Image 1 (cartoon, rainbow, N blue to C red):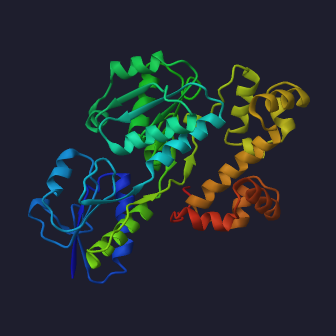
Image 2 (cartoon, helix red, strand yellow):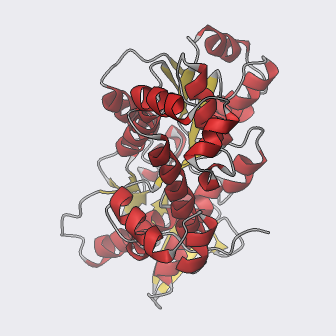
Image 3 (cartoon, rainbow, N blue to C red):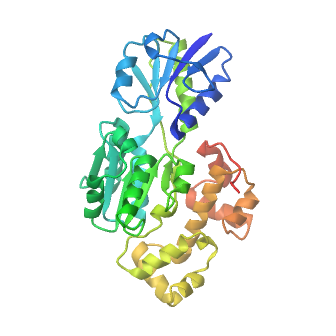
Length: 381
């Protein structure tokens, strides 16, 4: 029998995703018994007296890292907030998460960017480093506070001033959804328009808070269940082969799940801004180029010339890209059949869907669904 402690609160979306992956792996190991602070585990009161075989921990605070220094069994961390020589890491690839955010904003025309993060947390620093790397510049305005500040602070004059002084329009990368929601809330209180003045992108894709936010919050989805599963597999190796060198594991993020908080194109040309908004609206994927031109009250030729010069792509290509975004979201988050996804995304036929999807993503819809590693869920009604 292997006794495994889960040192995490199981109080938020991140913990739940990690725990699901751990539980799935543990079911393949009949000799594993999990101890934790949630209802699904045997009770774990205090790690200081833990004498089991292994620990999987979410080390967010220095106190937790200090507490685990006295543990003699293998420890796997899934947070990447602090480094310690005796602790193995299996976590999200935070640098790639930052690079993904930078690429997304750059593609949407933003020249002015900013970052809000958690001070003294390695994962936040890595996200910032990836973000600046993808932009090719270290000149990024930064607002950082401890994690406890972001969780407890209601209204901050400091943050309000930071947001007010940013050159607009600005793309703001928030290190996680909690920070993104706080930024969005301050913008609302200060009458700073999201996304027209400040486009906000978070991380974790906590679907309920992101969908209930006003406007809804765009976020980078992480492979939480895969992180949990691989953390458990790493711990198994450490317990079975203590003499073996086991490398750290970084799991790449999935993609940007775009909602209204980033539906903006940064341009001085109001025609481009409005056309982009129309294309990226809820029904934009079923519009034709003529539909968009009629809605912005210009000729098709005028729209095409301005749009291509400003964005580097045609209006038709932008509409197809919106169809692909909808299709990838449905592939990741539902178990709809391919025919239904092709219809929901606005493709005229399954053949056209497969052809466009392969050209835009480099893979087939079936393989994309398999590679995302997400558990399909029924679409909400």
